[in-house]
Image 1: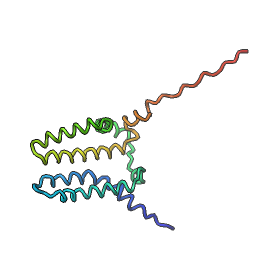
Image 2: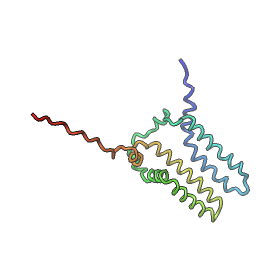
Image 3: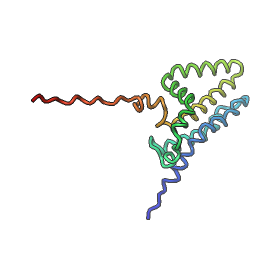
Image 4: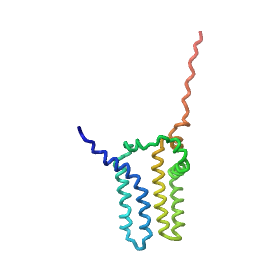
Length: 168
């Protein structure tokens, strides 16, 4: 019998996604260190880059077995409970220019008072966006905004043509 050696990379890649936002947040203290060389900050992001690469390499646009197993049984309830966050995520996706401008404005205003604070806010926004994107992936079949775009509940039924009448 042949052993399946692809289980370990898929499992590592599946769970590596969970490390991405936390690796971003863990790097924030490095921004506050004065006169820190840029390569050290880049090195601080290595766990995030490795986690992203492992996740994308193991999935390649498909759901793996752990992804399928982690789909929630109470998907509609979760989608309803996460409605505000999902709506915000879709708004940013539908209006990327406005989302970028709002984020830049917030970072610049924060950065005026203290430069590391603006950079820290950037990483916090990225981590929050990543966490909401991960949540969205779990409830995508029940997401109100995804269904609205692709049909679902609001899809119209085709009208049956009238049956011909026969005159005798």
